[in-house]
Length: 464
Image (cartoon, rainbow, N blue to C red):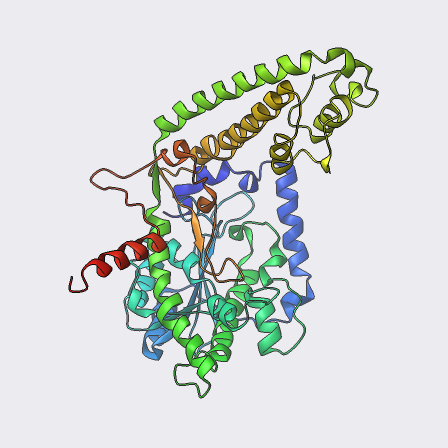
């Protein structure tokens, strides 16, 4: 998939609609701003590769050195809908380089002087198939694009070093595990700004960045990654004299780096969503909300006269009526009109409402609170999951969430786009929207429960 193949899809996105004067001016102004930024001119220039022979020779050097940094520049973050714009390469003994492929002018016309994407793809395929160690500052992101866009298989044997993971293991409390802050701090030994080099561009898609600027960024991206790798390998060493460093090296090489190909495969494979089931649930939960709304409105209407006399509440509801999602309006109703006990100030949160149900209050008030709790729960399930998850489905009918192995300070996974870890465990309806692909089955497991079952089986017959 090259830029031409996804052009129409890209142009439907706001950031690529350069017919819009506002978007156009934003891009042009940002490019001019970057050209005049002294930070850009402090960086080394690097090499811009624009001939097939240059690229072939550079790839040969990467293979001969048996180690390289490869980083991709793309039109966005989604390997299912974005294109590869260029490739950054670096190997020791060579100038860091950038290979432009799909840069465009402001009219979205591909610039001259770039290599053919098919040729670049074939050379990168040759490199990734070689017994050379692959280093990157966010390896999962780039390998997903290589696999999905260029159909380059994941070579588990030569996925060698991710400096972002290395930085996290060495110090999980870094303000940022981004490349530039870490390079500034540990290589240049100067105060890190917390910014990234790419922050120069703001939200401008990289295909609009002129080639003379792109080669500076591309060159430095690879070079800085390699220098950071050299710094980290002093500590993440299985033969390190310190026992704690040996343990960290074990975690890095034998757990985290081994896990990367699995996560890449998980994210690329995705999980299938039953869109028919999702639509059925949408109607079901809209009906539940309507039923709850009718009960709540009926109770509120009984207190119409008191509400009409409430000087602070009346102006809030005069145009749209009582809003069940307004904490302020609920506070006035519960604590000033109904005079309910203030067990936690005038909060209308779930815990407080559940606490009020334990108080000696009128049955009608209890009915209101119970119905309100159901209303809020069903509303959340509807908007956050039943309606939202289908919007995350790609063309293959699956959701491809992201799983970040360094997403928390404790080392536990985090999930995003969407967050599949926040699916409510007790809402069977929500989990029922996910389905196995044809010819496959779902297996649900809990590690602690598996351990208990296995222990129990051994305890019955130790010889089994």
